[in-house]
Image 1 (cartoon, one colour):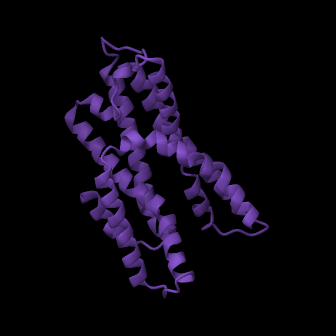
Image 2 (tube, one colour):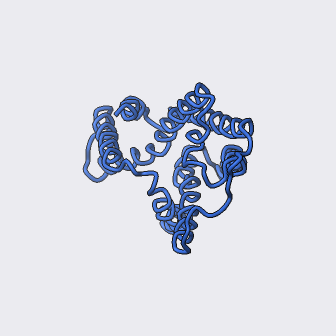
Image 3 (cartoon, one colour):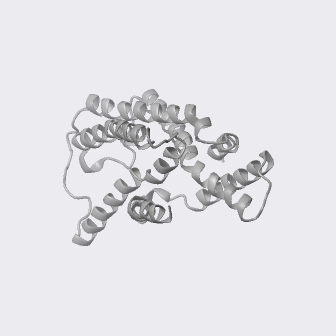
Length: 238
């Protein structure tokens, strides 16, 4: 409810251009807490009882863990539908198509993503082995003030990233209401639609407290449509 209360305010920012500051803050926080995670891991050093064996004891468990891990990776990189929405906001002409600056932006974005993910994954596994928790910040434990600060950065990052992922949904809902149901586009429509959406997602979040266990499933479910099928369908429609 505390998390949703922030979105009851931020969700009324009208479009992608208006959340530039929120997006920048989220990206900065992501880079910051990732750096804290791997530098604190280096400072803690390799644990004396570290093990690099499989966590599952059966072949079936190992197979499921393998596919779940692939799903987690797919979920982490599943920003393709948002990329299309962002590119749509860039001015484009036959002489200067939007794909030029967009391609540069994508390359820069994935470099930043790599700087966030790979040091944490490689150094964290080297230091803690298979005993590392879902959140490496839980495994680190100390210094407590630094871990608390990193957790705060995580919260700010997730608040900002939620706005980025929710913006295409807001646009879709408002377009549907205006074009199909003939509502008048106004601030009142945006206020009611987005408030109801945030309230609905808050309710779902309360019903599914084990959401982290579903990341692999959801990642595998959405990766193929947003990466391969959806762009092809859009191209054919155009």
